[in-house]
Image (cartoon, rainbow, N blue to C red; front, side):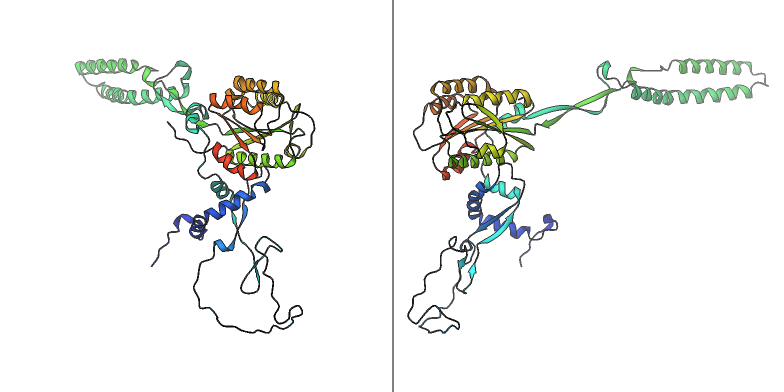
Amino acid sequence: MQVIDRRLNQKNKSTVNRQRFIRRYRKQIKQAITKQISKRGVTDVDQSESISIPTDDITEPTFRNGSGGVKDRVYPGNKEFNTGDRIKRPPPAGEGSGRRASDKGEGEDDFSFEISSDEYMEILFEGLELPNLKKNQLKKLVNYKPIRSGFNTDGTPSNIDIVRSLKGSLARRIASQSPLRREISEKKLLLEDLSGTDSVEEKERLKIEIEELKKRLASVPYLDKFDLRYKNFDKLPQPTTNAVMFCLMDVSGSMDQMTKEMAKRFFILLYMFLKRTYKDVEVIYIRHHTQAKEVDEQEFFYSQETGGTIVSSALKLMLEIVHDRYPASDWNIYAAQASDGDNWNDDSRVCHKILSDKILKLVRYYTYVEITQREPQNLWYEYLKLKESYGNFAMQKIAEQQDIYPVFREFFQKQSVK
C-alpha cells in the first residue's frame, strides 16, 4: 500500500505528481527554457510559460515480442507506390511539418505542458545568487522604521502621553482614596449615633481619627511620578524592495542586429534574476553611439544608427539619471553594459575614471559583456583594471549565442559568505 500525503496541496490534488515530473525531467525542462529566453521581452516575466520536451525523453522503455517473418500487406487507395518501391524515411522531429513519425502511422507532437512563472525562474536560476547579498543585507538593504509599541515608564519629556498618564493618576487615586473615604464615612456615622449620649471621650476620639483620615486623604498626590507613561517606539526592519536596472548598449554602426539580440538575451536574464530578489524593478534603457539617449525597449533594441562610439556619454547620462531620480540611499542600483568593444582610445580612460570615482560607489553590481569574436581592444583592458580593484564589477566576453547563459551563471554563481 502506498500512502500519499496531500494535506499541503490545497485543492490541487495533482501537485505531488507534478513536482515529481519536474524533478524527474528537470534537465530537459531546463534545456527547453534556455532555448525560449530569446522569445520573451525584457520585462515580460510575470506570466507562465509553455514548455515542450521531446517525447523520447519521457517514454518508458518496454519489452515486447516482435512480429518476425516477412509479410505482404495490401493497403487500399494506394496511388503512389508499386511492388518493390522503397518508402522514404519520415523527417525527424523539428523538420517538415514539425511532427514526429510513430509506429501507428500517425504523427506525434512533442510533449507540451505549462509551468508557472515561479517554476520558470526557479529552474532557470538554480544555483545562482546576487553577489555579496548577505553582506549587503547587513549594511544597506535593511532600513529601520520607528513604530509605536505600547507605553513605557521611562522616557524623555517630549514622549509623555498626557491622556494615558492622567488615566493612570485617576485610577491610582481612586484605588488609594476609596478605603480612606469609606472609613471616614463609617466613623461619621458612629459619631452621629453618639450625638444623643454623654460619651464625650468617645466623641473626641472619633473626631481625632476622622481628622487623621482626612489628612491622609489630602496627602494623596494628584499626579505621581509613578503615573507617568511615555510613548514607546521600536525599530521595525524595512527591507529596501525597490531596485533599478540600467541597460547600456552601444548602437553604433559596428553593432549589427545579431549582436543586439545576444545583448537582449543577457538583459532578459538579468532582469528576471533581479525580480526574484526585489519586489519592484524599474528598467532604464540607455543607447549610445557618439551621444547617449534614454529610450524605450523597442527603440533600444531595434533602432539603427551609424557613426563612431563614445562610451562615456552613456555613463554620464546614467549618473545624471541616478542623481535626479534614483538616489542610492533609496534604491538598489544595478547596471549592465553590452558592447562590441569599439571606442575612441582617449574615451576609454574617461570611462575608467567615471566608473572608479563615481558609478561603482553607487551601484551594487556592474556587469560588462563584450560581444565580439575579435581580439579585445583598449576598452577591455581599461575595464580589466576595474575588475581587479572592485568586487562589484564583473566582465566577460561573449563570442557566440551559446555563451550567454554560461557567462550569466559565471556572473552570479553562489559565493561563500565569510
